[in-house]
Amino acid sequence: MLLIGSHVGFKKDTQLLGSLEEALSYGATTFMFYTGAPQNTMRSNIDKELTKRALEKMNNQDIDYTKVIVHAPYIVNLANNKDQDKYKFSIRFLKEEVKRCEELGIKYLVLHPGSHVGLGVDLGIKNIIDALNIILEESNVTILLETMAGKGSELGSTFKEIKKIITGVKNKDKIGVCMDTCHLNDAGYHVEDFDQLLNYFDEVVGINYLKCIHINDSKNEKSSHKDRHENIGFGTIGFDSLIKIIYHEKLKKIPKILETPYIGKIAPYKEEIKMIREKRFNPDMKEEIEKAG
Ligand code: FE
Ligand code: FE
Ligand code: ZN
Image 1 (cartoon, rainbow, N blue to C red):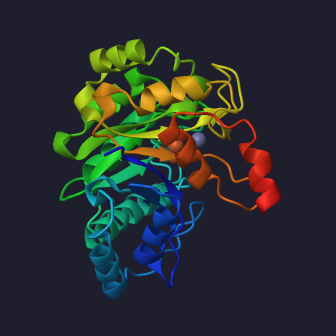
Image 2 (image 1 turned 60 degrees about the vertical axis):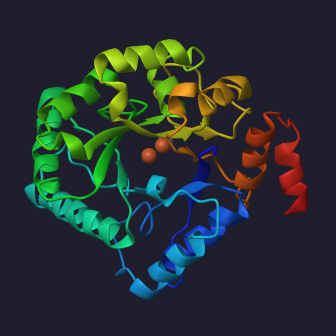
């Protein structure tokens, strides 16, 4: 089964059941969600009944729940400890986020490693490692470090930085990596030559750590350090290169998640998943969605 899905919502009143229904409406076999708004840390309690209903509903669907992903809010920053209160809050929040994942039966939590905001790369990485060692002390959830575009003082835009973090983490069973094709491109990696990229990743980090891949095209040129996602086939990476990654022999068991931009107010995921399944790019996709909306 092709493990393809997208980012979906998670609303207070429908929770996992709503996320599942949204994913099914796109024809997805997996999905990713934030347990609240991506840009803040306000979270409501996990509703056991809604979780139960979602898990029951999944039984007769082509969804591989073991590959469903939660994404941590992007404002938590484990690299910066200048403000000790904020740093401690981020650690505490992620500990609670791990618990929420456990309650939902989710195994993977994607995290942006963080930005050092002037502290320097080494101290930033040390802060991330110290924080992860606290968070992962008693975790049943694996935290996946996302490869970043290198915007501002973002850490984790090179495999070597990712490797340094992993080396410092004690609980190696509970740490992994989530690649993001847009970020890789913007960081300067040759996404078009994915075999070579994967070999290099294996050399530096180890392919066993790779647990998820975000499939996005990019609005910007290679090495731009910008991080602006584009709909698949409409950007600088291109449809064929992304298809090669999605159907790559070595990535069969890895969930592929779309985080491409909405067309106006409409999610493009149903159409993008269709293009992916048919392996055929539809250059009119954006106009068709606009018209239908
Ligand atoms: Fe991300
Ligand atoms: Fe991403
Ligand atoms: Zn991004």
